[in-house]
Image 1 (cartoon, rainbow, N blue to C red):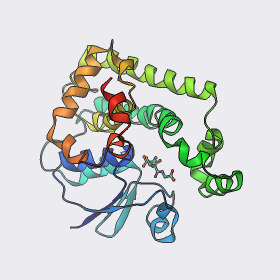
Image 2: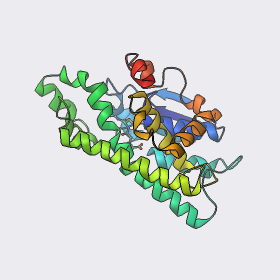
Image 3: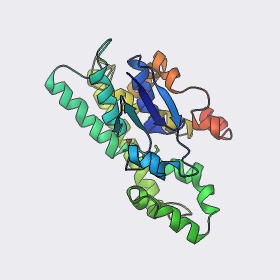
Image 4: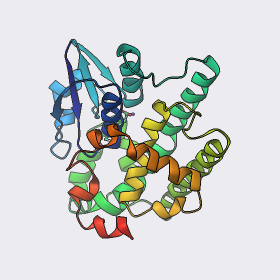
Length: 253
Ligand SMILES: N[C@@H](CCC(=O)N[C@@H](CS)C(=O)NCC(=O)O)C(=O)O
């Protein structure tokens, strides 16, 4: 049995899958995909993931893509140890609804402050033509880079992303207050795993004040961080505060 994970140290989607693999005690071989130099758009990688994004893994010769799907796959294939999916179909549906929400709302929203506040200099340094070439190189991401528009998102778009992150925290706070300690209740599930890197990203961007009044959310995040899987997934060098040391002060503020 072999599992080769194609990932990036600091990508939230890769971090999700690494937490999941650690929770299940799965051994993997890693291949770090160089996103800055476009390795994700090279033919070898596109043969594994035609979407041209990380993560992906190849399990016994079969490529599996999409981070949430990958987590569900890991939980289904490695059945030793605690399951990460509720047995009860109603709770399972509740978890899957959260997974859909996480993929569609906060995972998209958190990219806006990440690019606007951290990664933008790389794009500002490009000429219009260079940016257009980069933007058009991956259809899947073109719309996002159209909106980033080389020099930054519009104020409306930035504000909208903050509204979506706040709405996520409100929704979580209500769920945890009613049913904690985990998002679906007593069982730690894939929903907790998929949400956690987004909170780490917000914390590292100096945005943790948005859950100052959400005490159940703060306890939930402490609980996720205390699990052994967290340090395995967030090894040294895998947080944006490692890559951008100027963030360290902000993250502690
Ligand atoms: N829906 C995909 C999204 C993956 C994704 O967007 N990955 C980003 C890193 S977090 C990426 O590979 N970006 C490459 C690029 O923007 O060129 C998943 O969950 O696996």
